[in-house]
Image (cartoon, rainbow, N blue to C red; front, side, top):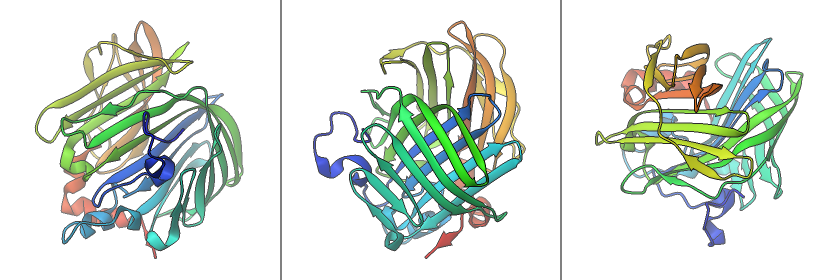
Length: 317
């Protein structure tokens, strides 16, 4: 399931995919509870693209992505937000085609469900996140997308719609909801290929809509607008106008596609180079609430931002 479509070489399947020096791969999950009151994101990184330690290592020589792995967990619940993203070196990482261990946490695929066992500590505000999240795709898609002419940045929306079960001990939290699973991979640092990108996905009545757009470093653009039905079938459509959203607290630019007005519902994450939001828009004649991301890779490259990152992204040897 995790293997890239049409990939027949088992050595490149699953979590043991080959990643060159300075490259990256990540697996991303987001979910909103059925009552709309709880949410989470989980990102498992090989070659953590936002790691200041990985960026520093690349300055002097090609760096090993397996020496910069992390699992990022963010909880958005009524009692407040929790965040964890601790980086681990190669000695605390193990993987094969169906499992990926990062320090005390791990991911495993059994052919039907992706299970994430989480044992992490937050930073800069300490707080444990412990428990289990299970992601069961409704369907697996067959299409992946090449994001640049060189073909060295790729995206695969594995499961545009999934059922997610959250059972945590710390904090004491249990809910069920609709979710999403994808993976990105690249053969060079992400900031080498792109200056800025925005991504959004939303559950509609009978399909999932995804918008993926980015400004490449050479000035050209990616503008993808697709839907996937319950069987995983893809349908591209012409994206509507791009409308501005209020800038984040850290002044990151945000915008969203809509056939009518667009509304910022809530800012979930606000950092010097990245914002995650919930946005209400109209697409294909239907109102939809999007999980929306805005990323400024020019901001990420700034020395002052790199100096701030270790406070939220500690490294454990």
